[in-house]
Image (cartoon, rainbow, N blue to C red; front, side, top):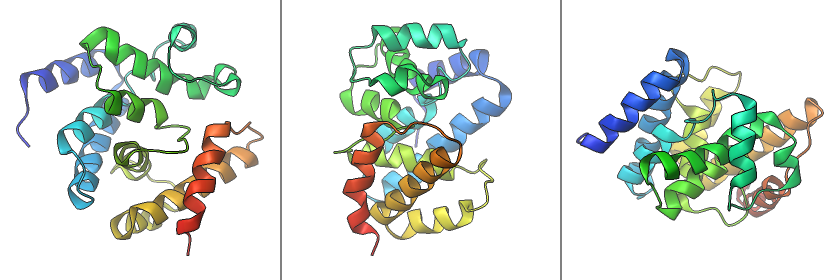
Length: 192
């Protein structure tokens, strides 16, 4: 994949505004997204862009993230406005529009949904959600298993990813956004 001038601009911004660890993660998610897009006949350019920019707002102060969340025209539920770890996806979707003039609804939605998922996810949404979970820098206990699932069947991998995410949130005593439950209820049919 040839790097465009615009991708260079995105990378420069990320290098200047993210920690080295978060910048590396962004590169890894972009690479994983391209691999998944190739495997599952997705748009590799959109996958790379959304993967690269998915955490653009992650290291902004929480107050700035919340400000972006509150001004968003995207569908935002109350649980998301009360949970700091969820701000960055919505804030990032807003930021890429204002900073870079990205208005492609697929890219915006994929960035927005990469933390909570949703019912009716597009292929790009699923690719970015999974790429974030299986990127090369991830080292949680079941990451190898999750990578193998993503290699075999994207829908089954998404089902397992949502089960993992919901289980993790419940174990921490966190609320679950309705969008996450809607996604889980859609993908549970792929479990078998």
